[in-house]
Image (cartoon, rainbow, N blue to C red):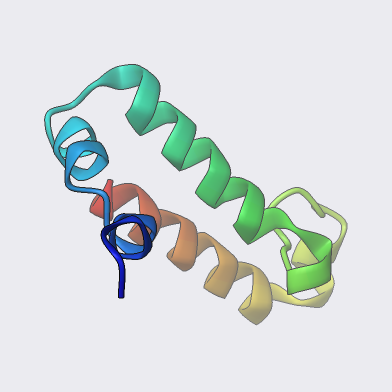
Length: 73
């Protein structure tokens, strides 16, 4: 694997910026992850408030995933 290929998988500078609390990078990462969690093509349910009554277990799972993402960030 080339150095560029390795950096595509893990970028130490970006990881350090995230861990160092750079708000712009941290917030961009969180927004991107929450967008993935809410992506309807991937089963996202965060913004589909009408489904909360019908599919409470699935909505709880989506909320737990969002909380897990926030904790990791």
